Image (cartoon, rainbow, N blue to C red):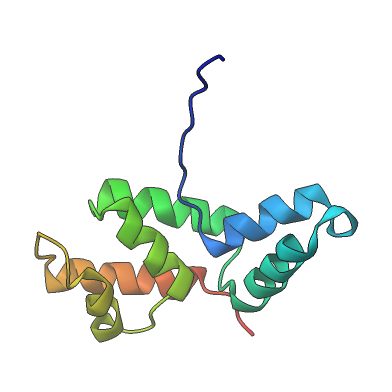
Length: 112
């Protein structure tokens, strides 16, 4: 038996939607269809913007990837809402940076 390497990637909801779209809706099994329905309803930004946001949050603002993915999935609208996602973190982020992150999220949000 050969050994295979398994890697894990954290994906935002818009990235999952894009991935499922590449498979094609007619080729999805029942669980993939449910997932596609869910991500279609709850994605709050475009996949490309989500990828950019993920890079900015992890690199520029030094937010853990797990927290950054959750922030992008929920897209909090205010600094107070944003603090909820960062409350369990080991480091404290300045209020000015939180405001910048909030503005960045509001610029990237889908208008519905």
